Image 1: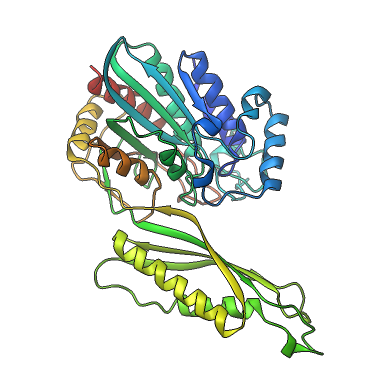
Image 2 (image 1 turned 180 degrees about the vertical axis):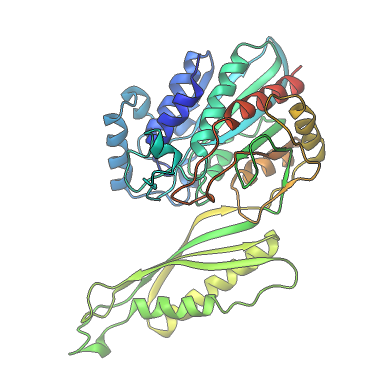
Length: 419
């Protein structure tokens, strides 16, 4: 029987960034196989050409070797090499019926975890072993819940098919799209996704969410000509100056009257020395809007600004999409089923009628959209987790009492759908 506290703490100690979740995914594959699931993983579970924001080959290989050093199964890892870290577990009931999918994300964040004495993982000696990486968004808890659900359902009789989707690279909204494009959602009739925490206390469950924004993450690369900044400055083409011009104008894009919008240049870098005209520069930009159409227009305006900023300074440039998401619309019927199945779970004290609200972005949105386009139904739920610090904070943590609540909630939903 799985010890979910030990499992969560082990995953917390070994946080892996998007598309490098080799050790985590290896544990998922091993556990699912031991429970009798058919397992699809590696290139069979994720479309390589549709991955967004893939790390460099150097980072992928270093992460692969690190996973081997920390006990990952080498035979399983071999199928994941190159950043193919998606996993799908499939369990069929005794009789034919609908296909029900649950989605769980696995990746961590590039954050240095706190070692202050009041940080629970520090107190109990399970802080990150990988410097600069941290589970600061509860995905260690999500993976743990997913495997707990796998174990619980392996001991149940049901009609139809259970599909457990373990997704890489949710951070930066990068991984779900590639699993959708591989067809992992094409046969799904019902989809339930969930997130731990989100400023909701342990024991409170929301059957749906609203407010998630469409977003596009862009990487812009500017290419100029290096030259001596003192002797021959006129012979240079300043890539960093072109990128800075773009930054100022991107932040000058007006807000919209037709829906909330957000825009941000989160990274601007370039140059090598004070006396060298910068030959290269790079920007990372995001657009967001509650409207998919407005977000697309924002993206186009950003691209136009980049084009003309490069032209002003005689630069070459290219722009690539490194992440994206669309708005989430939950089906009322699925929200109601989730709320009804939350009643009576030990430790649950509040099941609000209203959906939880967030202005973040979630790439599970692509999974919900694909299921709904095919005539299925879906929702995105919130499992309260009493976070002592905000998400993406060095002291973020989840209350572990939320884990069995989440497992039981998914188990009940599965048996309700697949009676």
